[in-house]
Amino acid sequence: MKISSEKSQQIFAAAQSLMPGGVNSPARAFGAVGGTPLVIDRGEGAYIYDVDGNQLIDYIQSWGPMILGHKHPAVMESVETALTKGFSFGAPTVGENELAELIIEAVASVEKVRLVNSGTEATMSAIRLARGFTGRDVIVKFAGNYHGHVDSLLVAAGSSAATLAVPDSPGVTAGTSQDTLILTYNHSEEVRQAFEQHGDRIAGVIFEPVVGNMGCVIPDHEFLQTLRDCTTASGALLIFDEVMTGFRLAYGGAQQIWGITPDLTTLGKIVGGGMPIGAYGGRADIMNHILPAGKVFQAGTLSGNPIACAAGSATLRELRDNPPYQQLEEMSLKLASGLQQAAEASGQQCCVQRVGSMMTIFFHPGPVKCWEDAAKSDTEKFGRYFWGMIENGVYLPCSQYEALFVSAAHTEKDIQTTIDAAVNVLAGI
Ligand code: HOZ
Figure 1 (cartoon, protein in one colour):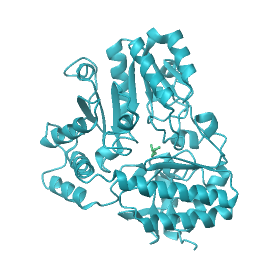
Figure 2: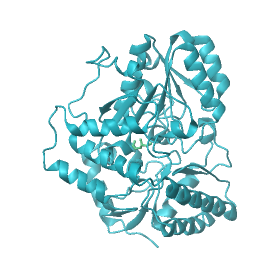
Figure 3: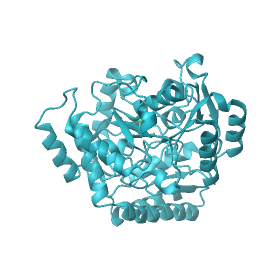
């Protein structure tokens, strides 16, 4: 099948004179795979429909938030009800309490939470809090992990920064990033050495407890334990960036499945049910350092926005009351095995890495354990695979350095269609 994209091309051409690169976030510009992005008209369950009328099985799902699929009835109803009351007041609302309670009940390490507007705001605020709480300066991050576009974390960053080869962005000054220490993911010895040398200066360690932003990369248990042990021993805070994994890998997030308790957790994506939101939370004695309870400044006119809270709360209630995690596991296992078999049958040097409903097919024999491994992937081949899948009606993340997401709306038939497409495509690239 050849998809038509005339309208997408026209709209994207107009967009380029209106917005830098024609987009409002570089991840969606198809920069690493070439060609013109599809302009999306609407979504329904597991599918998106572009302006040319193409229906595609959607494995981006808004880069993670739509775990229930597009336009889930419970989320739609909750948003519609909230809309009748007005959009934003800049004052306390009951909806904020509802969402905060749901998060605190679900995520074991979170005793108090602050709602913000995006994952970037959540990570930016969490590291400020870590510094304010400990009185120390240095933040440890890992190469290939991405924590949004916070200046001091936009160093050796994954996601679109890696995809578009600007892991260290112009505009981030040496001064801003001088207190960021970059280490290798899954390298426990480096972590131990860093703490031996700089332990009394380290305010916190922030990391993705399953990386989605250099493709799906899985932490070794020993690495996780080392992070916990070193931070505890030195008095630094351990920050799980669960913007992507929170409420996705389990209702209690990656920390539930790995059995490691962080001091702070950052959230986004699913907690907003597709509306702009972020959150950070953790131990009450730490969170109470935030203004106005404490002195660490952080604020936002639209923080805790009623419509975003309504979408987020409806999503979390649905996940709590009708947990889709077993179904997600079964569908995702079937997809991952099918993709791996398709790769092997075609003779491609690929490995599929997965945790729950997050996965990546790396054009690399694997295993991929850190950024150095991921960077050896054949990204040109990934681009051909990506376009081949689109031609077969499957919409994947447009970069080797992103994870795909299975939603509760994906059926066995969707998964089988995707595997059949991969068998065709991988044999021909
Ligand atoms: N942060 C998302 C996951 N890597 C990509 C979406 C974006 O940056 O626009």
